[in-house]
Amino acid sequence: MHVGAVEPGERALVVDDLIATGGTLCAAMDLLVKKCGSIIEGMECACIIELPELKVCIVWISK
Ligand SMILES: O=P(O)(O)OC[C@H]1O[C@H](OP(=O)(O)OP(=O)(O)O)[C@H](O)[C@@H]1O
Ligand SMILES: Nc1ncnc2[nH]cnc12
Image (cartoon, rainbow, N blue to C red; front, side, top):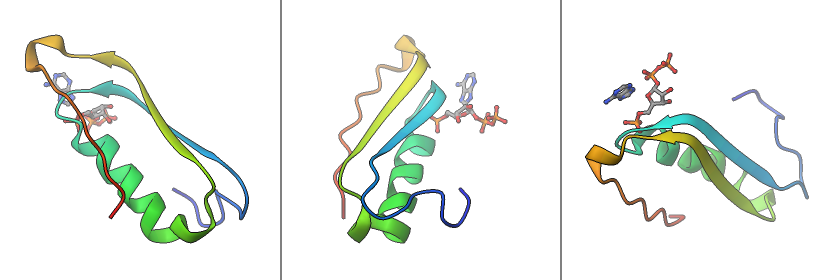
């Protein structure tokens, strides 16, 4: 993620191409909150492909 990628007042959509354990997607969300949390109005995430055999269910809560 580049410095200044998200500016004050903007919304953020985090997209990962594939979700396996969800670790990468959660880490990206955590990074956004850590760096820009106080200036982001809304955050959502999405993935294109999931691996259903892993039966992953993500509950991400901003810390
Ligand atoms: O849900 P997770 O368990 O975190 O796994 C998903 C991540 O794994 C893959 O990336 P990878 O680390 O293989 O690198 P790549 O993007 O270069 O393929 C994929 O692109 C996701 O970003
Ligand atoms: N279990 C998995 N299968 C395929 N690609 C992956 N990328 C990360 N985890 C993966």
